[in-house]
Length: 282
Ligand code: PAF
Image 1 (cartoon, rainbow, N blue to C red):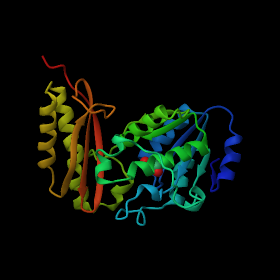
Image 2: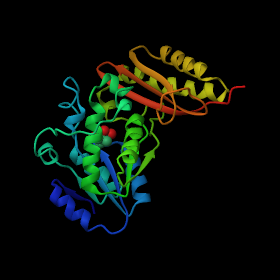
Image 3: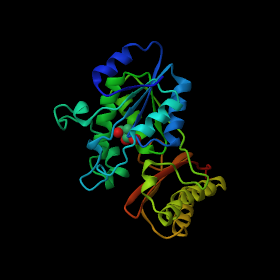
Image 4: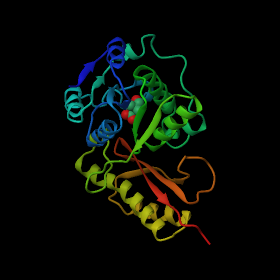
C-alpha cells in the first residue's frame, strides 16, 4: 500500500513508523520509466521507500518552465504504487517554504557555476537547498539519483561528503528509448521533428564512446562526438559538449572520464552524458 502525504507532520508520522533502512527518490513528478527504475533500485536496496514529488520553484529561472512544468499527480501515484513505494510526499510550495523564499541556501561552489550553472544561474543553489531540506525531512539511509542529471548527482554526492550529511548517495544508470533518447520529463515538450533532432545528443555520446573504445585520445573522442552531433537531424543547438574527469574536477582527463552534452531543441533544453574509458596514451 502506498500512502500519500502532503504535510511535514504526516511525513514525520509515516517516517517514524519505518523500521529498517529507508531509501528516498526525489522527483518533480511527471514520472516516467526512468523514475520507475530509480524506484525499483530503491525498493531492492532499502526496506522502505519514500518518493518525494515537488516542483521546486527555487531551481527555475525567471524565463524557465516552472508554470508549464508537467504536473501529473494521479499518474505519478500509479507509477509509485506499481514500483512498491511506501510513502509519497507531495507537499505544496507553502509547506516546503513556509517563510517564503529561504534566505539561507546551499552554495554549490564553483562546480555549481560550470556546465548547467553557466546557462542556469542559481539552479544548483535551488537544487541543493531543496535536496538538503528533503533529506532532513525524510531522514533516509540511501538517496537515489539518476545519472542522467550527472552534475546534479555529483553535487549531491559532494554536498553529502562536504557537509557530513549521513546518507549514502546511489547513482542509477540512465534509461533510454530504443533509439537512444534519454528519458526526461521534458521530452513531452518535443514535437515529432524536434524529437528527431534530439537524437543528435545521444548520437554524439555514442560516437565519443566508440572513439574511446578504438583507443583514441581525449581530443579525438571529443572531435568524433562533435562530428556526430553536427551530422544529426538539424534543429538541435549545442550549448556544451565536454569531456571531463568523472568527478567533474578541473584538469587533464585520463582513464575514466565523462562526456556531457547539453543542447536546445526548439524551446526545450536537453542534457545527456556517458561514461568514457580513455586508453592510456603511449
Ligand atoms: O532531478 C530532479 O527532479 C530535481 O532536481 C530534484 C532532485 C527532485 C530536486 O528538485
